[in-house]
Amino acid sequence: MKIIDLTHKITETMPVYPGTEPPHLSIANTYEKDGFRETLLTMFSHTGTHVDPPSHLFPDRTSLDSLPVSQFAGKALVIDCTNLQEGEAITMQQLLPYGSLTDKADFLLFNLGWDKRWGRPDYFNNYPCIDEAVLNFILNSEKKGIGFDVIGVDPIGDAELPRHKKLFAEHDIINIENLTNLDQCGSELFWFFALPLHYENADGAPIRAIAFWEDKIQ
Image 1 (tube, helix red, strand yellow):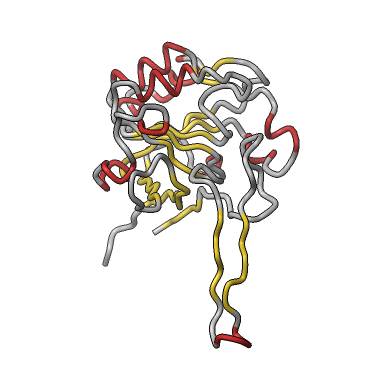
Image 2 (cartoon, rainbow, N blue to C red):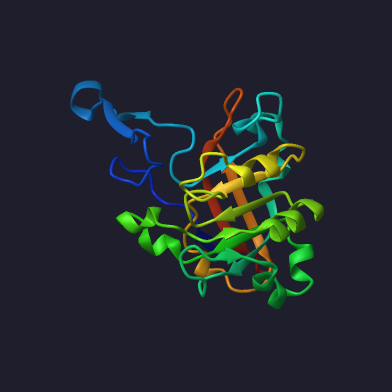
């Protein structure tokens, strides 16, 4: 079995959405005083590699904890968009080389190569975003989710969040942000898990995202 971790590590110095407080990892108990170590984690629900559900934007829509666990697992396909320049759109042209695989995938994961900028100021530059046609294809083909190796599905400077809103207004779909290592996943279908923290009324949560390829069990 081959497994690839698609998740950024949570640290106190990691990139966070502008204006958001970074996570804090405080030692709550120590070996010397308590005989064990325990860490108090303080962070926003959309920290690091994380998932957005419809309730992230709409109060009457589906929260993460209301979705079945099957929503977070399935067949995924990485779409190579590394040839795009800053500010260019992700169009159906990027999907064409994959043929029918785009229909068979439960998740489309867009590789912009942006994870190489993680921890650098240009991570927040004008990354490419999906256009209207790609968004319509995703919704019409009833995907379980989409994912990106950037910090948002909308441009970082667009406070109106039109793609988020269209994605979540009427569809139970998840959006995954800040993925990494998508360049290691090849151009065929693979198994994908993006399991969030399971808490009440979840508007988003950090995930451990993994890709794996299963060998035959002898």
